[in-house]
Amino acid sequence: MHPTTIGLITTALPAGHSSSTTHLLGYVVLVVGIAVVVALVIALTSSRLRPRLLRASGWTLVGVVSIYLIARAIAEFWVINYSDPASYASSWGGPTLIGVFAVHSGPGIAILIGLAVYVYRLRRRRAVTPGLARMGRTKASEESQNPP
Image (tube, rainbow, N blue to C red; front, side, top):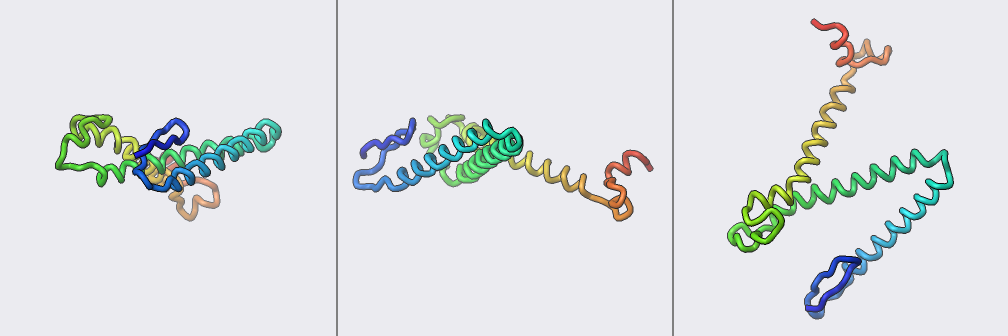
C-alpha cells in the first residue's frame, strides 16, 4: 500500500489501485472552493444581493452537511462487523456497540427527528380552512383565538 494525501487526509491505497476517486474528490473540492470565492466577492461588492446570497449559501451548507450525516447514520449499520467487537472497539464511541452507534449515527438521527418536527409544524401551520383562507388566517390561529 502506498499513502495518498488529499488535503489533510492521508489514505492508504492498495498497490496498483488507481487514485481516480481521489482526483475526482480533489476536483469537486476545487470547484466548490472557486464557487465560494465567487460568492464572497459578490457578497462584498453587491449590497442588494448580499442577504439573499448569504442565506442561500448558509442553507446549502446546512443541506450538504445534513445529507452527509444522514447517509453516514444509515451506512453505519452495514459497515460495522457485529460479530467482531475488536473491529469497532477503537472507533469513536467504542468499545461498546451502542456507543459507536450513538457517535456515528446519533447526529443523523437527530437531524431526521428535527426535520420531522419541522415538517409537522409546517403542515399544521398551513392547514387552512376555506373560509379563513380569504382572510389570511390559518385554522390553528383561529382555534387559539376562539377556544371551544
